[in-house]
Length: 342
Image (cartoon, rainbow, N blue to C red; front, side, top):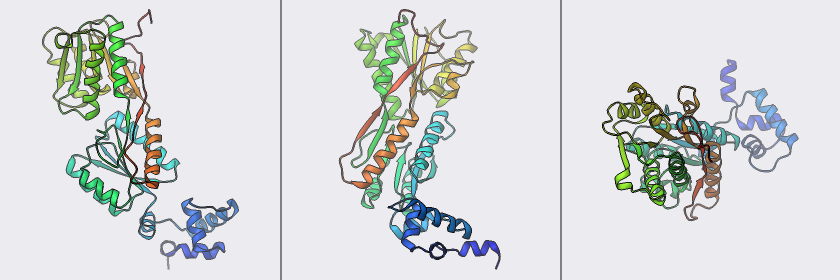
């Protein structure tokens, strides 16, 4: 029998015999669950390494009704902020001793099918960063005691927890910054088919301007990008007609960078001709060619809270839904520098 076949045939019982311990001790040592002495854990790990034993997480889930996998649902993974958020989640999942099962979706049908696959894998939890899970499918997860956490989703599903950036605070900071910078005519740029978070930022921006005394019906121009991301911002700027607002707030950084380049093609720049603020402090925002003033979302804190809520709900699946808001901060750069009087 070849070496590879021998390794494939190695079982947890083989590891237990080599280490001189019970099968239950092997399980605790390899899963990092339960009480076990460091010396015993080391003995089991050494035996597993010598035999070439690998933990089968899927089989482990079938045996224990729960795997060490956490499902993560994403969309448009190429988007810089979403990629950064996924990286933060993967780091936190691994730090907690789990493994991530990542699925990229393109629509609501994908979301439904992915959630059902995750239940078949008996994942320990599901984190949804994109799309709105149908309540019926969430109920399937709940019935199997699989906790679900949504990130920057509309918090309207019972028995699901949500972790959201403080969009209202971010919009208020943007409005106040543009007002202090002397802007009195404002613009709000967002994609036509916006996410819930994007719509919330726009509503909060208008409310913050109203509190500053702005006649928003007359002094706020709503710019609807036909496409998402950079291309949406670029084409909006290229096709813009009429008087340019003095201060423009964008739903995300990619829209803002595209808008900035589109206006540059027309001979206009920030902050000389207008002020511009984005949302999401992506690496592109800080590049020398953009130096975009933007709202920073703390992805590490979002990921930490998401895992904390996921594990807490696993202990008490029927507790009321909770929403946690993660603070955002304004990062001052060249497209709307900090006022000298501030």
